[in-house]
Length: 132
Image 1: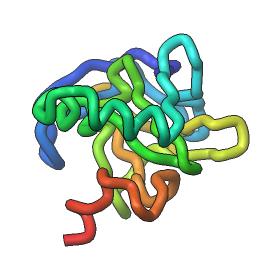
Image 2: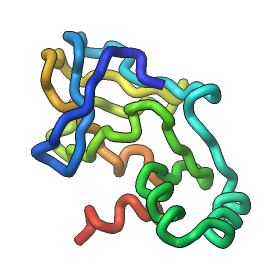
Image 3: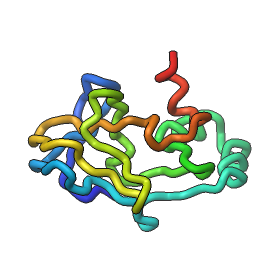
């Protein structure tokens, strides 16, 4: 669940991006897991969804999800629009506590970018296009 004010806008990185709607301080918590807002699917259930949903619907859902520690997460808030920034990332994953924090001061209007390789499993479908 996002802990800061954000908004969506066109991204220079990929499609729609998540942008800071307020100044964010270095090391400030930006996101933390909250079961009320962040869905978790075990792999067996995820596979059953793939079989049960129409392919177009499942592909849409899959674009909004990621695989970490052999479970699938899907954020229901705007966190789902945080793009991969690689070396340009300004948000870091902290596995302890399942949180994300700002790596630096982030001004209003700056896109929030994380490094998908920090938390996604190596076989996560969301990493495939980054390896090309």
